[in-house]
Length: 110
Length: 118
Image (cartoon, rainbow over all chains, first blue to last red; front, top):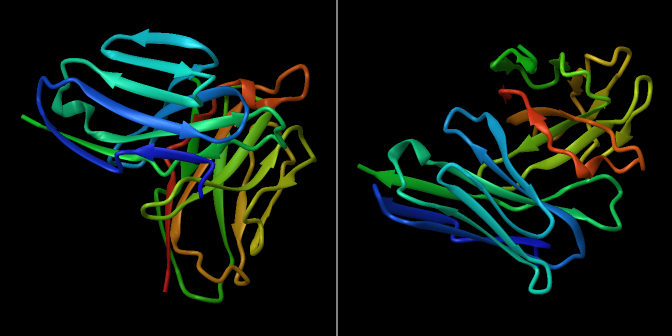
């Protein structure tokens, strides 16, 4: 069993829909990262959070440390949001390596 | 502008040849990393470096080598010993935490190099 699991693996939605991507992890963490990988392959960091909630534009990330679960929400989704969204856990007993989820491929149709 | 550059974007090589992938950053970051990405899989760490002239193996270091002679540069050599070298390779950098924990900082990624070996 992977230490970081994302769901769903693939998600197709219509423009304007509210999107939720989930990330569950099984290790104690000091932080959880959300990243976006564009179709061309480039990766950008969206959020790094260790508690509560963060918001940037139409993107919202939440984390529940007790339940070892994080969600990424996109409000008023747009075709330009189509990308792979990746979560990565920063384990407390780190040997300096992040534990990466496999990613969720999101397609937003106009 | 600050950032990370990788070159080339696409690279083709014959089996049995070594190939070196370039990674340069001007973010003044101490830590640099090399990841491999295969279709449908998460990123896997090949090597990382915390400071100049020092680097550590990641999960899949076999068949790869790196050097860190300058803070800005962290080239990766894919050797002929790497059994399945065809993949997408990503370089990243980050600040290095005062407590020695690099994971508390965001990683900044380069655009990647897609290597095909035939």
